[in-house]
Image (cartoon, rainbow, N blue to C red; front, top):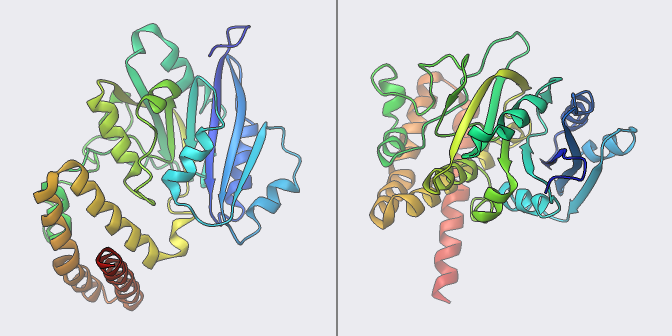
Length: 321
């Protein structure tokens, strides 16, 4: 896919849902990146039926970027919107980027240069360091979740014994060195386009959450590697969009957890995790919320489980017809 002047090509896909001024900030930061050594061919923004002014803001600003905006009439979910955006990108690499990310000058150049090295041809995905405004380095890379880890979090044992039960986040490593990792944060997920197409992109059954972990697992199963680079960074305002609807966020997270379990842990593993999610986890979550005396958290837990049980009842009745 290299162009005639041998420049590698990059396409960026951003899924937007009511991100406010974060989207404009993201694009402004991209505009200030160092583009030497590659061509930014297209930036696709897939808007999942936002009802704020996030798209109006970028339309009213003259950005020096090759923008393409896709307007969906309904929220199709993150995975499906990513695949939709990727279908418009015939580039060497695709960067899946969250709108709550701000790029730095070399956030694109350094990882692309790394991937182009002949010795790195087996590396399919690269992530970079994420920092907070105060310079704090976020520990974002994770292990791929196991059946045991899913069960432990549903039981709430990770909160009862935080020092004895290891988090799936790689917290024992300061993220201040470059290394191979099982998974990089989906907020900045730079992937070879041919690998993305080989694996048929994101699994669209994941509405949101765990779709990136699922893809990372399939990448490793296909014999490729994922790398974390520490020599450049981004600023990531975590949960910039999803924190707007905490009950729905929890609902979708639980749905994705069940789907991931059935897909990767087998039927028995899926049944076990589903049982824990439906009958044990609500009580472990409520107990922890009571311990913290968080009435708002109790409220959105009840709302999330109402949505979960309503959805399960709807699916059951639909299958009987």
